[in-house]
Image (cartoon, rainbow, N blue to C red; front, top):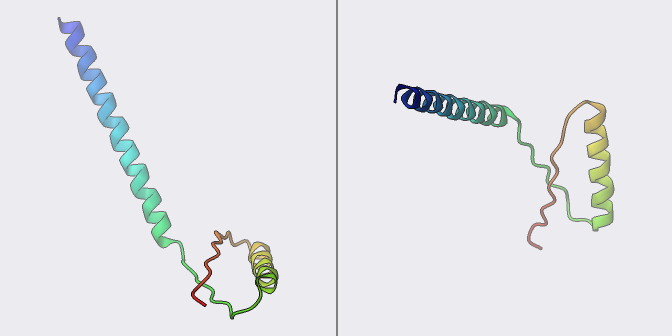
Length: 78
């Protein structure tokens, strides 16, 4: 009987430690994401080809400076 109780205590402690570590990791990642700067570039209306070339130039300039980008294209109302 004592062996089963010991195993249950070990499993409960392990489960608590695992959940605690996962929550701490999630909190750290949220903090890092919150410190990450958000930049929105509004480009003038132009044909998509020119916008693509301009976007490519911006991305290349950022890479040369060592800045990592997450680029999302949003087409606004016309």
